[in-house]
Amino acid sequence: MSKCFLETSQITQELVDQMNQRSKHFEVLDQSKKDPKLNFGSYRACLYFDQPSTRTRHSFIAALQFLGISYSDFGDTRRSSMEKGESIQDTFKTLFTYYDIVILRTSDESVLDVAHVVAKSHQKTLINAGQGSKEHPTQALLDCVTLERERENHKLLRGSMSAIIVGDYDRGRAAKSFAMAYKNLGWGSIQVVGPAPLTKTSEYPVVPLSKALGEADIIYMTRLQSEYGGVSDAEFDYQDYALGPKEVSLLKPKAIVLHPLPRGKEIPEPFDTDSRAYYWKQEKVGFYTRAALIEALLL
Ligand code: ASP
Image (cartoon, rainbow, N blue to C red; front, side, top):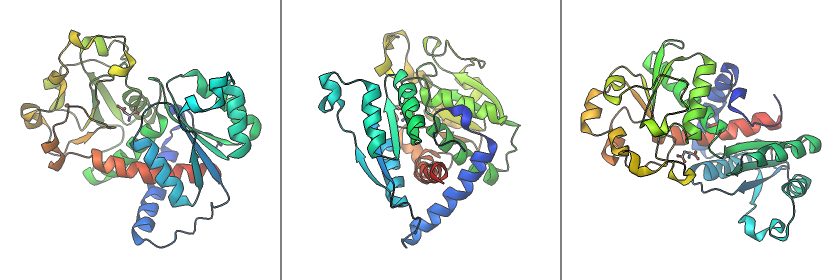
């Protein structure tokens, strides 16, 4: 496996299986609270995040801690020498001089390519933790690992599952990355549900929510991504794409509802206790999957 994890296209069935198996092992190890003795103590990592994050940031931090890797946070970019005019390239040259792994989330899609050139020349590890509205490959990986586990429990067959992606498809990197991974893996059909102004780039059929809900095995909910602009929220009512009581009554008894989180109002809190709500489990699987991914990149 290459030392960097940058694109959703790197997700293969083999990788999902490997991450599934290893993340399950890590979960058991972690719950035992015994020293996992994973021997990565000589590695150092840096998190460079110029966009807000709770889950991705902290699951990566927890994963690094679990593996015994010390880490630091790049912090506010305005406190770095970029404020004095230093280039992105020189900034990453510096980071890869000190660190073995850089975990990068950036609003500027082009930064990833610059960082990758430097990572390659230093033979170091770069992980894409969210690239503008374009890609979020580690989210897609953990989504697929979560689904692979539930698929087994639900006796769903790869190749014949049906998924719908609900909400802000165009600006949602998590939604698009999940769709791409699911499609590349050949797991089944995909349909998109959402307001017309937010589903213009969908290569999948865009269908009404009420029609799609009752047939879907997997419902991938997403929040409104207003921070990316481009569309006025006044053009639609996002509540039309929420899981209200009427929509919940249409769900299959064994549907799997995922959400990359954070949520807005599209999933009301009372649904959390429904047996079809898998997003908190998905969040937890994310921690162990990211630990398994870092391990695989370093071995
Ligand atoms: N946490 C995911 C992301 O960073 C989803 C979201 O923010 O809506 O893209």
